[in-house]
Amino acid sequence: MSRHIDRPHSLWFDSALLPGGWTDNVRIRIAAGRIDQVEASTPQAPDDEHYAVGIAGAGNVHSHAFQRGIAGLSEHRRGSDSFWSWRDAMYGFVQKLQPEQFEAIAAQAYVEMLESGMTRVGEFHYLHHAVDGAAYANVAEHADRLCAAASDTGIGLTLLPVLYAHGGVGGQPATESQRRFVNSIDSFAHLLQASERAVASLDFGVLGSAAHSLRAVTPEQLRDLVSMLPAAPLHIHIAEQLDEVRQWQAFARCRPVEWLLDNATVDARWCLVHATHLSPTEIPRLAASGATVGICPVTEANLGDGLFPARDYLALQGHFGIGTDSNVLVDFAEELRLLEYGQRLFHRERNVLHGQEGRSTGYTLFAGALDGGSRVLGERTGLLSKGYVADIVALSDTHPSLRERHGDSILDSWIFAGASAVNCVWSAGRRVVTDGRHHARERIAARFSDTLRDLLEFS
Image 1 (cartoon, helix red, strand yellow):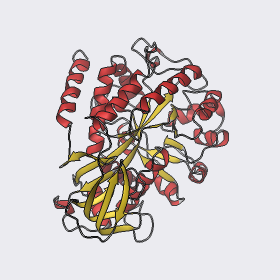
Image 2: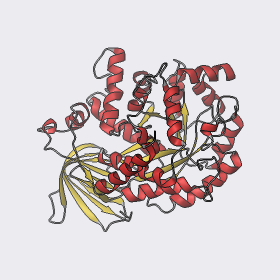
Image 3: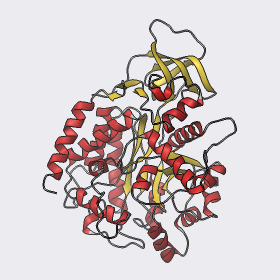
Image 4: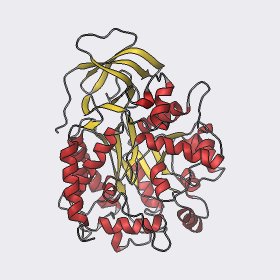
């Protein structure tokens, strides 16, 4: 599938979620990959494509696409089991991965994202080098592969090359298992330039940057990184694990988020991924910064990270986005459901993240996640409004859980009643999913299967 901008065309929905709320009889005209016009309460025209329910496509703020290849393969306990033991297993997988295999796995993950209603992905990309740790002749070899997977599947890509300079807090040397990740500031600047050329091949492609974590860069390197793309999205893993927090406290005599807020200009272009372990004083400071927290509920549960303090943070109007991180399960509605259910289990209440009066919990989660994705993925997405990228999802009203649902109850039933309700998906105006299936699903899945057979045959 080649990526291109389709001819102008119109979609007509029985009901659509517009910026002003749910509206009946909505026509959305698409031109050059963007929404050119939105007409409310208008009759269907002969050339309109007719669908039941229209919502904006979601942004996935945090993905490591290649980790889709080990989903479900680390569920046997061997002694002490934690994030750190899972990381060792992931490192073992990484040592074998070749560029064409990297691309095949990414394409499979991107198909699954699109089928679940995610139309743009923030790819937190830190696997840069060859198996022996040497740079490829094309230093952006894997960035090119990610762009190829995005082009093949049609997903919008925000590429976030990651600076990973050290193996631990305080500038510790990288281990042999981390050699495929590591760059100096100078080699990373070269990688960014090459990645910019790769992203330029995509419609609505965005280039940002990322620091892997405070343990993988020095304070001086972080300052250099922040200045490299001063207007672009900037992401970082932070405070995911309690051990990570303790290590940083021993080194810097303060907590990780506290240190970042004190030592960097954290603002709306920042996405702090996970931020799971916040102190009572960090929560209001982070909410007031304008940054977005990238919450990845499925991965955080799978790795035993802990629960983000979402109730207190959202009560202060803090911004959040949703990521699929390790891609152990790619399902946007499941991420939202688990975010709320984690809070219910912790607080022993229902509808914890209910938001504003008169709106449902499903609406609050959905609208918040779309807003966060738009803020930190570098494109105008997340709204069915003129000028925004035409990333649109049609939900079916034929699933039993969505029968006779109207307004916010559509989102509530999709998220909480487990309805596989995604019917069609348009990315930048091009329909890539029909009847819940990506147009290239079989071809991409076959390539993915062949790739895993080769990678895991002698594991």
